[in-house]
Image 1: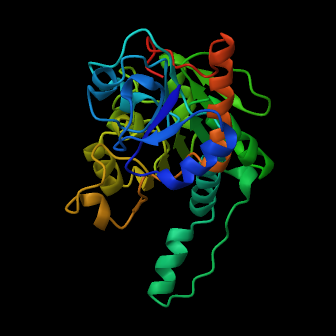
Image 2 (image 1 turned 180 degrees about the vertical axis):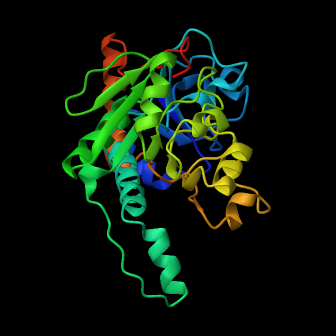
Length: 310
């Protein structure tokens, strides 16, 4: 009944302590530690080596993603068949994403990049800034994270729109859905926030055609996945003025190569895929609760729908 842990970015000591507290009767070990691989029934992982889950662990019952998305697992053509893959849904990961989105929405709303540029030039130029009800923010992706972003932005008073694959009804939010609803959604939005999952249907959705439908001078914030964005199209939209700025936490290649144009572009903010991360002290409880469900014979919560890719 062992749990195996694999991540090159998350702290194993912190997770070990949290898992031992949350599930003291479930032995845990790190990926490279010696042990009986046949005893492993649960894998808690971020970007495990391709093919290794199936090759090493013949009795695996459940794969837990350390991230909200499961695309990092679905790239493995030898992923074990017939066992559930569980998305990481835990309040502190969501809180981190919401904090990040609120920070950068407010940063663009209050024209902070322009004010910082004025400071560098020692230029005092007063300007009027509209308050939140006069600024429309649009969220692409209305799952748990998208809806929590809307809740916080609503409390700040922003005018809000949302877009999702299927119809949603959210109080205080102008909701659109499907391909037919995308154009109407985009024409309203001054600050576009993308929290979509990465699937075959959403690949490169952030492209020149989409940007052309936004009001000129709109802003982009992408905290979804790098595969959602056409990076050349983002640069072209910035250089033409169609986009006034872009804050990007995710990229097609991570780490972002040192010679990538985003690093030096004056209207791009680069962050290292850290908008929201699962916090061991909180998330271990969600993992332990799902293991308990499995041991009772129940299905775990938050199973990914592999037919949809998330």
